[in-house]
Image (cartoon, rainbow, N blue to C red; front, side, top):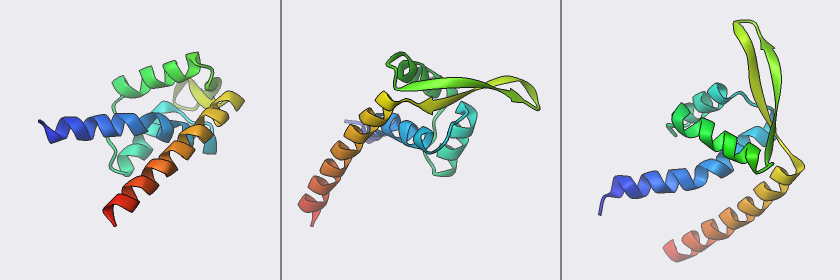
Length: 107
């Protein structure tokens, strides 16, 4: 069994919630999100982020607005929808439950 595989799967599992959390705080541009995650030592590449954002948009959890850029073409900024806020709330409840279970077992 490869521990790196398991660690990668854990990160992927949390990425959806983390992405929704970031966007719930402010409209976000994908490259900025990738940079923020990298600063927190969670490496995410465009080939992972863009399909995730597209899936969340197709599931109506995110919407987007085009904004002008001073350094090129307009950019797509994502925002969380009401449906996305409800979904995120459920994910956070599950996360808190899982965190409590792990903490209670490891004490």
